[in-house]
Image 1 (cartoon, rainbow, N blue to C red):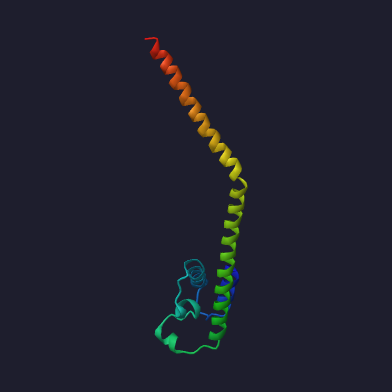
Image 2 (cartoon, one colour; image 1 turned 90 degrees about the horizontal axis):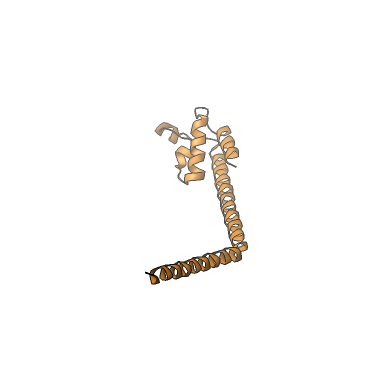
Length: 126
């Protein structure tokens, strides 16, 4: 989606816009959620450029809105999917982890009792 937005935005931008500027604008939009409408959507750079109407501004705005919506929804769906898989994995392992923790505590308790018994028998002979 990021590449498609970059290509679409570059193809409908003016001739004096570099591909690096379009890529950085796409990065700011998609990952930082920080953008300037004139600089990042319409690619207007100076005051004279901002006063001049462009025939492609409506298409640039449509591409921007669609790309931001699709990328936001897809990122949220990926996040929800990852969290859901992690929850399912840990839910499946809960019994095993509980038994392992209980066995670890039981072993610690048994070793402490054994150590105390040996220490008491050793000190009792003195």
